[in-house]
Image 1 (cartoon, rainbow, N blue to C red):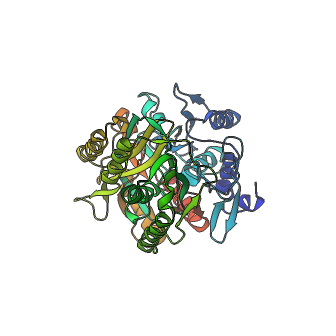
Image 2: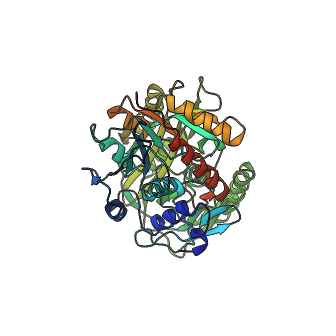
Image 3: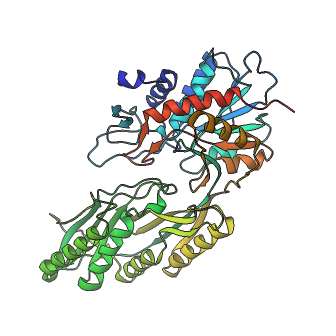
Length: 488
């Protein structure tokens, strides 16, 4: 781990982040980071427990003079999104994140950084370890699997926590205080298909879409970024309509909560169309790149003749249904909020498209701050996929977090922010899925707030954390702890 990260200020925060990032922690494979956190709490001599799903809770009593303040829950999630560039050789299951300083930013070498939500985890660790930071009684809650289902928050039982206030440290702009978020549901379409022998006189091609920015499928969905699955579908649809292109395989996207950056398809066409196909594809590529030249300047689309022709391809009837269904399926913003300016209410991310060995899988993440609108869009997607003959499953549904503009802790944070920065913070709701909405189901009377340092490019290899923002955020955290309201 680079020593330059450990030398950054505040050292208490960055050293804990460096310790955490040395531990592999992919979603649904959190055994090592759970053990790491259990050992951390036990070495401090603090009550440390792991619940039945793997969440870790560490409790620390109030510092002298703060015993009459309300108990707070400080919460962040242990897992991180694992994304890397194609040319990066990295094993997330065994390696720690390789970080470096780039001006005001901390970045990772070709991978996601894990600042989401590692900086929140590191903040709580630093407070727990401190001997000179005034604070009320703290219940540190480290949840698991936030990024791929929020199963940690969903599994947390009532009665585990006594805190009256929850500080969720999982937002990504340091001038924002979050009081609401979107819920979500996974929409997964699957079906089988018959494979056919590749016709005589065919040639194979590999089509690759890459170089897209990707990003968070909630926080970045309104930016007009390219979706590799949608772009690939355009190319395949045109090739099928004009040249009888047949699909052998498709592998597009990776994680449901990441806007897909890459897609690869193996296809065939009749050899007689070889030259015309390449010419036509190049025209479409030029059109797509012109459309995305501002938002996606690094978009690359390659059409390369294969050394060997695929042995089998999709049944043409199923293939036509697949291409038309993905064309019809909504991707991006579906509805803007009528109640909060510039807030995306409902959206969908066509996250993963897999076609191989007679099986099709199309994975979507639909988000909304309004439950009825969430399922309206989910049903629209289901209809498009069912018309194509798919089985469609809704899974992992979680609720949004309804804003409370009369929150007592909101008043505390806004007052401190304005005093420290000479300007009012932006009080917002976000289109990401925060765990507050889920935690509130078992702790309905807990006063909740979310904030954090500036992090850009979350869920992509361009993820980066601002050093100056971390300093601003740390100062904010310390004064919040000193000003938690007195028990009533």
